[in-house]
Length: 188
Length: 149
Image (tube, rainbow over all chains, first blue to last red):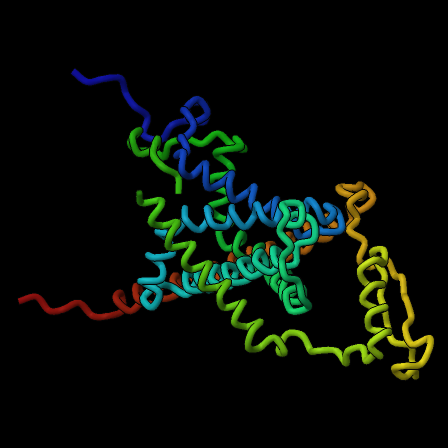
């Protein structure tokens, strides 16, 4: 006895009816959290639009979010750093861009805290300001503005792949012959 | 537990970067900001300048009048340029939307450039691999078959 015939290649209707591949919770968290970080940074950089109060509070929030973002991807940092010499050129470029971004963004947030005129005084803290920190804040903000889009664009394939599934741009179908268990697994 | 371990490592790395910034300020601040000539004033004028700086509204600068010498009357000139206005009344004002638009354009432009470069790089690599594979297949086909024993 044999079961019902299974088409080797599912037709369009069957493909549309197939359940969308589930995106793992961690991938979903990464996607949305990174999107919020990007929007947050864009707003924080547009100081003339947000005004100083929102700029400063957003910057402090971005500092905390940066810590969380790095913590969530610390495994990648360790893995890539260990295999830095044996990796492809692109991985090395990503690693260098990320290192530059880490240094620039950290110094940007730290110098921003040190020249705060609204957020910290509101909390009763009067930080030490000075021309060095003001200049460093401007410089690192500009470097960060250059590196953030590069950091995002170097992962554009992952963003498009996950974005398509999360935003439902196109109903995804299981590849022919792919087991259901794998289809329901992580998308990375 | 693993999360906390990673967080501690991240805080350590961030701390090292911040310490680097503090060290830069301490030992090499001159590489980023050049010290100005300073305001050379008589003691009474210095006290007046300090009081003015404290009580003046935002946007006020105190400068030394050109050609004036310390001790002379009219050394201090007060300039109001509005540069230090905190702008607390203009938060998220639609009038300032072009600032946000400009940031978005810069980010989108840089990201698009990287994507185009990445696609071009990948295509070139694929073409090179295809050429190498084709060359290897042609060499194998042209080679005479080994004589059978």
